[in-house]
Amino acid sequence: MSVNFAELEKGQEIGSRTVDISRASLVRYAGASGDLNPIHWNERFAQSVGLSGVIAHGMLTMGTAVQLVSDWAGDPGAIVDYQTRFTKPVPVPDAPGGDNPDTPTNALTITGKVGAVDEDARTARIDLTVTADDGEGTQQKVLMKTQAVVKFA
Image (cartoon, rainbow, N blue to C red; front, side, top):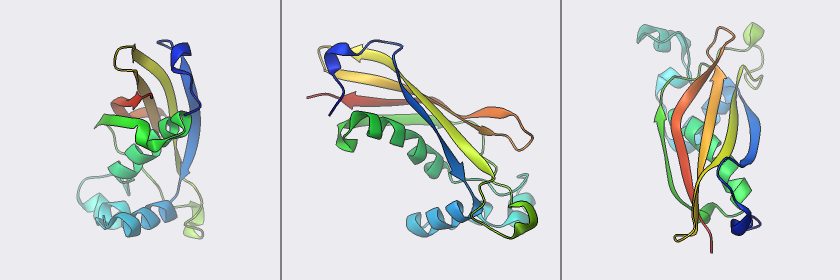
């Protein structure tokens, strides 16, 4: 792990990133995860159950968010706890013209900061903020109380 535990302070930023999401991203995730729910790929079905359109998988959103912590820590095994609350769906509209499903139509913006440091346990709680476009041009928090605990040797 390249992070120096002794130098961590509450409020310290660990980084940020933006990750594009396309309809093709959803199809690839569905195949890898086995979550073939049509709300993640079929516009008509998603609308028939009351959604405005196709939405990203919750676990795709959650997994994408924690990657920031994993990269910062340098060891995914150092993350000993991870939790979140799903608050809003991440809409993934069809690409303009529908010609290229790899065209990103939404993105997750993830920022992280140290929320707490426990010197006795040698852990740091990392608080993540995760937002995406709501489909109408406004950024919204799609995950709340997103926290990962990282254990230091």
